[in-house]
Image 1 (spheres, rainbow, N blue to C red):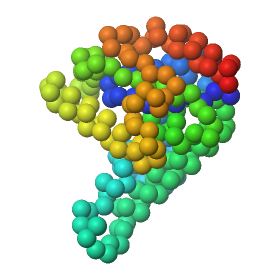
Image 2: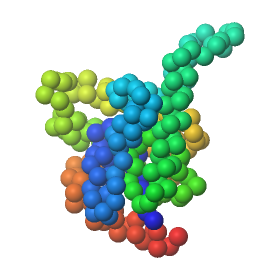
Image 3: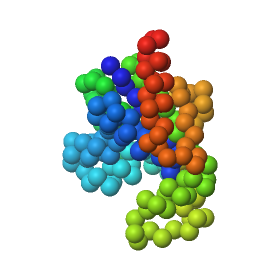
Length: 204
C-alpha cells in the first residue's frame, strides 16, 4: 500500500503534483473532497468548513482568555468538531487503500501508517506566475497583493501543523522528499518522483 501526503507552499504546484502522482499510480487523490465530505457529515456549508478546517484552534479564542475564566462558545466547539471529523476521515480514507492526500497535516495525522511525505516549494517569481495564471477572472490582485495572500495562507498552514507536531512546516528534515518547482513544469517531474517513492518503499 502506498500512502503519499503532499504539503506545499501556496502557488508551488503541490496540488497539481499530487493529482498527477495519483493518476500515474491509479489511486484516489483527496483534496477538496475531504472538505466536501466533512461538510456533508456535519451538515455545514462547504465554504465555512474550508475556512475553519485549516485553522489553528487558538485563532478562535479571544485574547482575554488567559486573564480569567472563559467558557468556550459554539464557534470554538464547532471548529473543534470539524477538525476531529476531518482527522477521522483522513484516517478512514488512508485505511481503505493506496492514495494521495493533499495538505491538512495528513503526514502527521497518519504517522503510524508511515506515509511517504512530500513538501513542495518554489521561489516567489514562480509562485506569482502560477497564481496569476490560475486566478479567478475577477480576482485581479497585484503582485504585492498576491504575495501577501501566499504568505498569509502559508502562515495558516504552518500554524495548523504546529498544533500536532514539533516538526516545523516546510523544514526539510520533517519530510521524505522536498521538491523545488521553481521555473519548472510539474508534469515532467512526476516520473522521477515516482521512481524515488518506489525505491523508498522497496527499502522499507
